[in-house]
Length: 203
Image 1: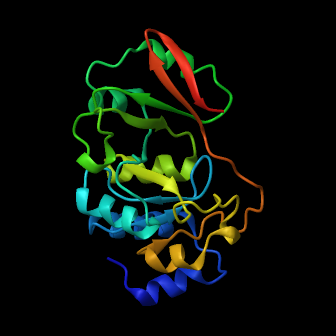
Image 2: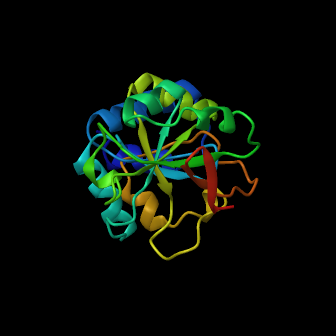
C-alpha cells in the first residue's frame, strides 16, 4: 500500500500519466486500501467492493453510519449478472437509452461485502462509462465502491479543489488524472427498478 510520502506526492499539482495512476491505484486496492478518484460523476472515495474491512474504512473516513449503503461501479452488463441474483434484464435496454449516468438499486446482491449491501439485500450499482474508471475496474477484476468525496452531512464536492483536506489525507492514494478539470460535476440519477419500470429516487 502506498505510504504517506506517496500521498503527499499525489497531492502535488503535477501531471502524472494515466497508466501510472492506474498502477498505483491497483497497488492500493490490492492491499485493502482506499483511493480518491474521478468517476463519470463526482470525485469518489473507492475501494474493493468485496473487501468488508476496506469498505468499513470508508465509512469511518466519511463519519457515516453503515446503514447508508454505498454505490458499486462495474463496467459491463455481465457484471450485474454476476453480483445480482436474477436481475430483470429489461433494465439494460432502459440504461442504453438514458443520457445521464444512472445508478440502479437492484434486489438480491451476491458476492459483495456485507457492508456495501442494504439491510433489505439490495445494492446500488452503476455501469460506468468513464475511461479511467473502466480501465481501473477491468484491470482490478473486481467492482469498486464509489461514494462521494465528502464528510457525512457536508456538501458534495463539484470539483477536486472542493474536496476537504480531511478526505485527502485519509485515503491511501489520490489519482492525479483530471484534478485540473474545473467543470462542476453532479451525482448520478438514482432509480429503483421494479416490475419492469423505473422509479426515480434522485433526479
